[in-house]
Length: 449
Image 1 (tube, rainbow, N blue to C red):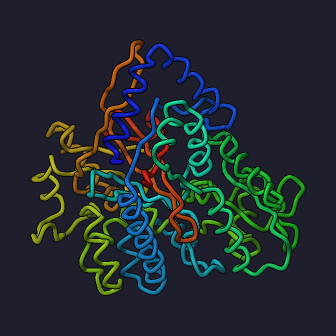
Image 2 (cartoon, rainbow, N blue to C red; image 1 turned 180 degrees about the horizontal axis):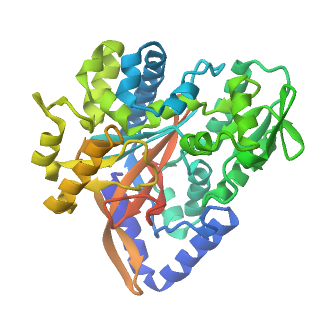
């Protein structure tokens, strides 16, 4: 069965049961709440159907994303050895210091989520989230919710629906990293972020998953930590495995505050296994997509990695004074940005959550010039990327009657320890597709037969 056929079948069922649709959607939200699939303590906006991909599309997503994470690992190695590579990323000096520290790990990126657009057999990755990817725990659980829906059960009776295995593969990757790190004690994990973040409930799912698998765990704020000799404590417990969800720039900005100072010192002295370590900010920057799309870096990657870079990454360049190569042209970067406004997106180099993303085709020439002036005033802080057509699919909505409306679709695959584990998608009317920016989320099922 093709994805289009699966969508048509599900939409037909929903149309035939339109009177039941409000109750089904309410049931989805109730089950999300039960399973802590919440953002800002509310269920994450969703729809009456999931997305579908073919087995071939799944294989393409898996293989390309796994190659790209190997590119990330390779570039981190080069970054540590070559100052010109550091200049290509442009991390602030205090973050460079932590990025260069020895982590005690062979594989630096244990948790990653490269975000992209999939349209048929065309897949482009726009960002590589490895600083603090959110949504890991929700992915499997959301699939469980949807598999209980009557129209999805009916479809599953006809075709095998493959899903994600994020939490198991993630836990395996954490325990491999901890074993590799080489501490003699049993792991005691801390899921670490500010106590007032919008994704807080997800951390308690992570804690529960650790504990179900025999790993003592807690949820902590970076300010909760205290070094006592060679042990790092939080909430009265000595911890040695850190699942770092706190954003790197935010925690380093507060590095002299009590608790945070000890948290960072534990990383510096390798007293705890940090996942992901601070060098994960290197591929987590938008400037890393510039590295992936620039042929000047071909020599550091393998032939297969170069093939994937060319085929799956849109052209990306950091906005700082100088000339760049763009589609076999050598041109001043700001002149290019003005000439190609309709074909470009400009975003903060170290931004996240969809903040500050600007599509040239959605800005007036005056607004675009103002943005470029801002970029010129702060070289390296903004990055431009080739515009990629955003795929759209119809989804059932209740406003209040049933209708099928187009939504823009953003694909979000997860990798743990370099292994693909599944994906979800985010949906929005807007070109900025992010839960933080008001988007919705649905699971992805693979049509295995």
